[in-house]
Every structure is written in C-alpha cells, then in structure tokens.
Amino acid sequence: MNEQTQIDNNQLTKQITLSLSPIKEHLEDDGVTDIIVLGYKNIVIKKVGQGMKLVNARWENEMDLVTACYQVGRNMKRPISQDHPLLDARLPDGSRINIVFMPCHNYGGPCVSIRKFPKERLNVERLLEKNSIDKLGLDIFKAAIGAGKNILISGGTGSGKTTLLNVLASFIPRDDRVISIEDSRELNLDHPFWSALETKQKLYESDIEIGMARLVVNALRMFPRWIILGEVRGPEAWDLMRAFNTGHSGMSTIHANDVSGALYALENLSMAAVDMRIEPLREYISRAIHVVVQIVRFPDDSRRVVDISEIAGLENGDLVPTYRLNRLYYYNVKRYDAGQVIGEFCMDKKPTFRSEMKNYNLEIPKYWEDTSSGTKPFKAKEKEVKK
Figure 1 (spheres, rainbow, N blue to C red):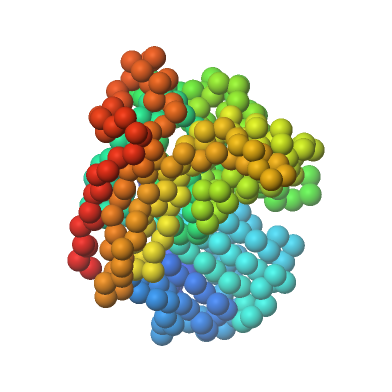
Figure 2 (spheres, helix red, strand yellow):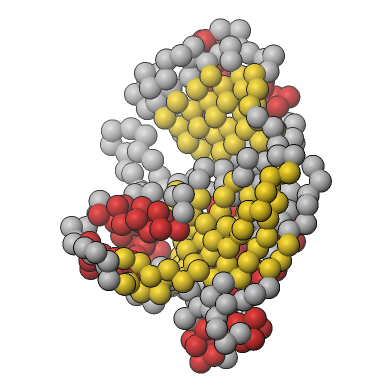
C-alpha cells in the first residue's frame, strides 16, 4: 500500500468513525468482534468467547441513524436510499459493514451489522497456536496446492472460511499468476503476481453492473495459474467449474454444513446458469473440485478444520451417481470441558493424487509413504487453550 492510499484510508476511517460516533468505543475495542445496530436505540455487541449483549449506547432518534447511514454510504461511494436499501461493503481496516434500509428494515430505522476484521493477521503459526489445525493437516494442504488441486472451503457464517483461504493462498508457488475475485475485497494475499478484482454494483438506472460471473470469464484472459473466488453463491459457480476444468487451478468458499452439503450447494448454484441433467453435472463437478474442506465455529468461539476430503470420482447410487469421498483428515470431538471443546486431529486415507505428486517430483508427506493400508494410526492430541 502506497503512502497516498494509506492517507486516503486514514481519512476515510475518520469520516466513517465520526458518522458512527455512538458506537465509536466498540469500533475501537479489539475485543469486540461484531456490532449490530437494531434501529436507533438498540445496539448489540459480541466479544470473543461471549454471547451477544445490549450496550448502553444509542442514537438520539431514528433520523440521526438514517443520516449516519447516508454519510457512510457516501463515504464508501455506495449510496444507500429507499430505492437502493441494501449496502454491503468493506471498511478501510478490512471489517465488513452491511446496512439494511427502509423499506426492507422498519424496526426503529436501519439495521447496521459490522463484522470487525482482526488487526492481527492470522497466519500459519497463529492457526497452529489456536488449534484450528495441526501440522499434519497443513501438510495435506501444502501437498494439494503443490499438485495444483482445486479446493473448496465450506462452512457457516463466521466460521473462518476467508481466513483459511488467505492462509492456503500463502502456499501458492511464488512464480504463479494469481487472480482473486470478490464482491468486496477481504483477501489480502502476499504474492508478487496477484491481481484483485471486485464486482461493481449498479447504482443508477443507466449504470453498468459487473457481477462475479463476468469477472470469472474476464479473469481467464489475464493469464492466471490460480483463480480464487472469495465466495461462490450464484450462477458464477458454473463459470468457475468451467475454468477449473480447463487447466486452471483455484480455490473458493461456499456456505454449507458439511462436505457433502457443499457439493450439493455447488450443484444448485450451477443449475441457475445451465440446464443440465444431474448425472453429467455431478461428473463435471467431480472433475472440477478435487478437495473439499469443512471448517466449523464451535460454541466456545474456536474455529477448527473438521474435515478434509478428496473427491475420488463418482459411485453408483440408488437412483443417480453419488460423490465418492475419500476422507484424508478429520477432527474428533472428545468432550466439552467448562465450555471448551476438547478433541484430536486424526489422519485417515491416502489421496489418489499421491501418484501425480510422484510423477511431478513433488514432496509427499512422509505419513502417506509410511502406511500401506492408507490409514494413519497417529492422532495429534489437541492442546487445551487457556482463555
């Protein structure tokens, strides 16, 4: 980031903080992870490891909150009004802000939701320290990315999908060309050949909207080795599958509760763009996506990779073919101790792409060589984290 950009961001931060002065204290509190404004007189915050609670802060009246939202939209160059009642943007510090305006929200005025971006950037060391994954799990990711495998990260809201995506992107070889595509930029890749694309909203009648699908098509003309889609949630899923099936490697996130659910969600999104029978569509997806990762946010606010599975083609089902999942790694919950989840990370099967890694002289994790059955008996017991 150059000096002028930093100055502009600092100025923008001051303007937005001034507009949101009733919640300034919580915006500056590093312990606060989420802020929700439910109309002008109900403000809710959430801190790490705690539930949501009302705080003693409010705007004087509904019109003051409406004016504040106008100012935020104007500063972010994303105007909001009753004709354009939804705003979704990224603040200069990386935090996400969502505003729902009248008539879509009428309870005491607009609804403002802010998910704060941690000032400390999570990296491999921090993931290990937080027990989000262990070293063997990271070795699987390094092997998959080294082999150019396409990875889909699945999880719920706030589970840490984007954070994990950032970390996985750090394993991409430094001489590869990387294109990222997002609605509002959250990824921050430390890579010399990275270009970040963002969608453009239609703000007035004669304006032009540029969505995810169009950016995916455009990215193919930018000579990428890797295409990273911040989140797949629309018909761009089909364009992404096409890109992955034409020799490009990539990663993306998706909202789903488990590995199988992520693949079925991908099917439904693809069907919005193409009329295809389920059998050939599943065949297409099974060739496009190689590894699916499930990350979960537990009740104690910890985030853990609970499943890494390889798609090993299709197998015969009762009516239509189903995905053959080869589980490589999982997290086994043992118990809850004083609200803290205790468990262990376990290795499972060998991946089928292990033979490809040999052909390309890529480093293969030692535990895939040590076992003939494909099952790794070792289990990494998790360290208990003190709050």
